[in-house]
Image 1 (spheres, rainbow, N blue to C red):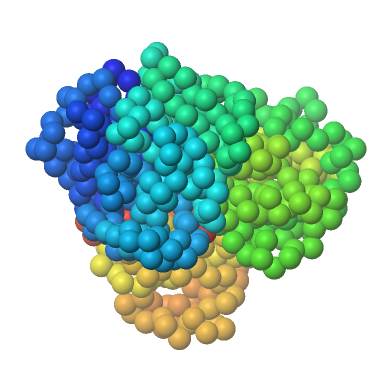
Image 2 (cartoon, rainbow, N blue to C red):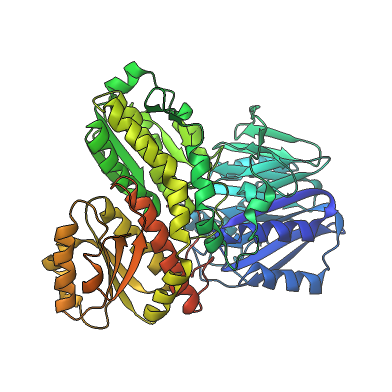
Length: 611
């Protein structure tokens, strides 16, 4: 959460910083600010709300065309302190010699703050981050690098940090521990960002910092060291997608663009991974021999939110196709409950960004317990991908909308291919694998068919846009799809939506059903449909309007529901992907009808990089 960007070089510094912030706004948009050096003085400009507010204020105060300089900037997702100008970053020390921007949480900030206040330091904000600016000032003895290092040695918690000083106009110090930060390498210029999306339009070469890295950055080099001042070497990586991929491309919202990109994203996730000749899948990031695969006795999936719902679909895949027992763990609980992990356990952390703090903690706990760890991530070079040691990338391209869409469908597709791979190492027959491979090849085309129903789904959404409560119910492979559909609706439309296994209705939730509470029933023509028809009748008996997803050509459901969303005929293995694509559209059009901020829903940020 929160977005950081920084720049040293010959460009117009305010413009460059603001452009980076606009590309990072999905990480937080409660407030924003920047700090520049001008005539040997630090100028800090901050404003509440979105980056556009900051841009207007910057133009009024200093203009946008200051060249040949240095600056740092931040867009905030509030943790400590409500959104306000005082709580916005950057934070300065009392003498205005140092300015910092920070993402993360300083867990011992209260102790540090009390100690500093006893020394006469005055704090202007409620944030934990401001402690850092004052600590650095207290430790400064002429070396900015040493001052930052000494300050960070007193800190407990997580940070991505960028620091500038009026006494060092050509130098920026950056550091990371638990929150993502990278350095973009240009021609006599350097960029700092918490996400490659912020700098992809300026440079394609990036250096991903590891935890406890501290870098002295000038316009011509980045000298990376440890907190103890030992030299550290980090490779330069290349951004593997075009900057235009992070633009709206003519769509009204990133979310709709990314929903509509799913056929292409799925094709990229699948491409080169289906081996018809061997009746198997090829997953190069897995890096496990047949012998090592055969030793796996159990799978644990660790994830949060949408990624956890993908993992729940994966559980069905691994148990049905590979005959392996599977646990799906909420990643935030994984390390705190001392999970039972053996060397024969395959732990699969799932994260779109590869920076989710709780999932990263699960990776480290699993590695400490000797598990085989293989991540499923979208962002190349992300921390989870690097620390897992093995990673199967989605290749879905950048996802800017806060509500994840194409990442989910690609995650589920990758998990299906991994289940086939593990199954072929066990008892999955050649013929069964070939049938599944043929289905996977058709996924992009089938999702495109779902997207052709956009106008029909939009019309249904208009009918129910004023509902304040919603139930989603599903069974089997579509139970996780019901959870994900409900999550999408509540994320972007602010409608209270609950996803349930359909059998759970009569165990309590049915008490809430009445004519103002619509139910979206996933009634595709799959195993368990007959039971779902009974559940639909139970809902109608309580006068709840019922919308159903049904398989194209199946007339069994149509006569007993109020509205129908048709899904192309497919097996239970592919049905969650197609059905969730339709539910994403349904949520999008309801949110649009309600006038909601779809790409930047209130209180949310794209990457949860703090616990």
